[in-house]
Length: 189
Image (cartoon, rainbow, N blue to C red; front, side, top):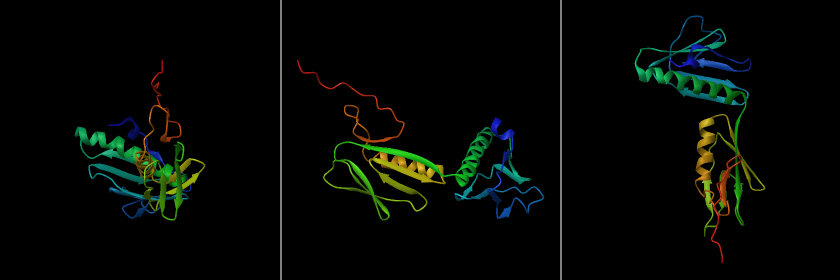
């Protein structure tokens, strides 16, 4: 079993956790289920977990344990703990990813419910924005924020894949702290 699962996950003050429709304040007995809802000031997240993992919400904490001793179930326990911690952190404060659009004539702007990218192609690239995310574009920097860490990361990866940074001049879309290994161009003799 994961070392993370041996300690219960504490529920912060402004966060409300519901397991299969029963809130933590109303459940005096042990309830096992697989659908967990976390509600906080930054948003509400719901996720369905594997039936092989038992989740117990009681007295301001969440305990996770495997229902059997199979190796795959033991591996799911650590994954479940990580997902629940991310849900609590995301409902408390939004996750943020920043992308830098670099290159002459390259730009990104938000128009209504879509992101319009000029990336040196003969056409503009239009990407629809997910409803649960907030995207802001200013001076070559795209800021993507939202309560769900997976949705933020997947959308940032989708935008980056439109024009990956190239190693000679560094043009393209890259993450804020990403380091591009530069190559030396052709030498003239």
